Length: 254
Ligand SMILES: Nc1ncnc2c1ncn2[C@@H]1O[C@H](COP(=O)(O)OP(=O)(O)OP(=O)(O)O)[C@@H](O)[C@H]1O
Ligand SMILES: [Mg+2]
Image (cartoon, rainbow, N blue to C red; front, side):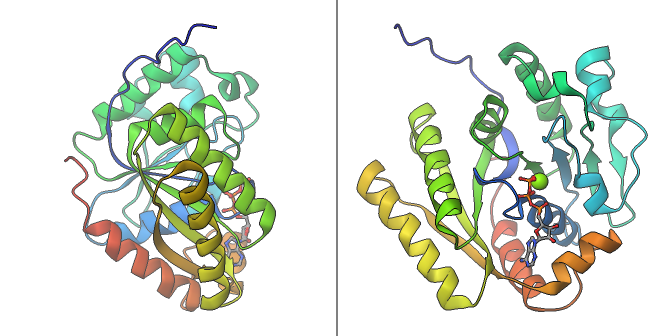
């Protein structure tokens, strides 16, 4: 079969938070990094879990509009941005709208062009992707300047993170990929998981992946989700602060 190259994507000034496997903490990490980055920037969080939104729940806002109206009814994307009191803007997804989870390439490109326009005045864009290696996930990874892959120390999570990196590398070699190990028992547990991923990526794909940080398992995270509040003081918040500091050093528009 002839390989048809994908159309060129806009480059988004920001990073996507993805990981292959479901439930590894992508949304918690994306939302809380957005909250931390809002101390020095004007981040825009984009919920790309298009049919199963929940960044709004974790961020603690109740959006009036969402991406369903943008994609299906042609509403201006800027008009659905929802402001949180913590300084984070959210582009909310819809919940239970099946067609949004199955967008075609054309609609996806239109959506990413809209995000590129928003990114001209508001950075960084933080794209919270759904689980899996579907078209919307790979498109988000290719569009964002940096891809943050979240995994947990479980072997299944490692396998899914590797699968995602492999597909991404095939779609567009040499992307900037950085790894966050979440729900680690301790530093050693996190470093071991990262070393495994680095070894398979090096051996099978011949590419480097960089460690962005290790976020420990911390009851504060589940408490924050239940209360719809930012993560409270503790080891997870400390680790996320370290990751946010590294992300602040990146020139998003470059
Ligand atoms: N560091 C952590 N310590 C303890 N619990 C955590 C941590 N990170 C995430 N969790 C828990 O894991 C749950 C799932 O997290 P989250 O919704 O962010 O995952 P996800 O990867 O976005 O899932 P999905 O694939 O469904 O989008 C959260 O509700 C939270 O309770
Ligand atoms: Mg999620």
